[in-house]
Length: 329
Image (cartoon, rainbow, N blue to C red; front, side):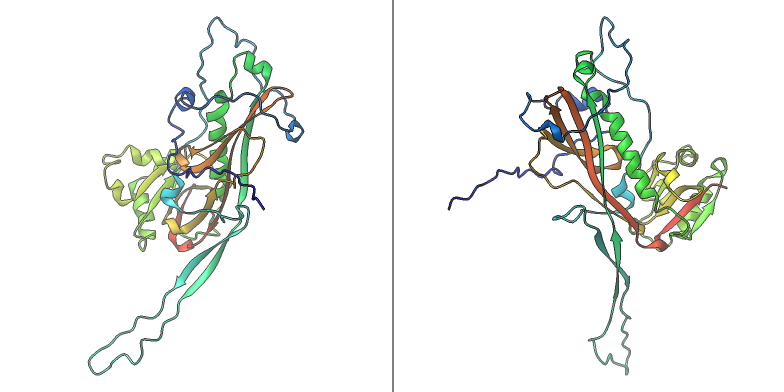
């Protein structure tokens, strides 16, 4: 019996991933592939979407190809301050269980006249941290009328990437609560400074690696102090500005100092499958550094172009002694 074979790309999407977030729309897409001609697929599987909101004044003598996006938010690189794991390889939607070692064995000591009786001793303790994951999809479209009037799928790309990054930041920030982390300091933005950062560092005195993530008003009080940005960053592994996600955190939380093991994150892309998607690429989601899947497809019935950014992500607190919060008064 002859077996049917399916060709699957062997390219690892993590090997070459373009960085998105610091370039213009044209920079990102000028080398990207063009939308292929209409493919044959069932358009009944596609949802119905109203037109975008745009002004009819977008028909001047010369329409520039680039688009300018409204500023949305800034983000900390997730893998730089938290532990990040890939999702379950067989079922990305499955709840992941992370092993958390909470206790080592007792150290054996030997002195003259008091030998160690047996080396066959020593117990450790491992706890389970459950991390439910969610599929996040950020879709958008351009109708045929909009396309012929000058709108392009690429015009909406960066705005949607930033919107998705904001949603993801909110997921992670739900862990920033006093219920999870009892260590904390309270400071108004105008009063925050190196002294407060030093207190936070002291609260994490056991941590060999410490990162500080702050809302912009607090972050600016450190960046405008002489010495910021040198190789030491005042003893921090990294100090990051993030303006998104804080509304999902606990009341008055405006920052977190942590060792990466304070919170675990499970994130990755969906399993590839046969579908009407006609273009699929992988890239990082702005400053977050998270891997996302970029899909393109076309509804041949209406000639509406569609695109989406997709990833799965979940987060949960692990070592709650490895974090300290910054609270507003």
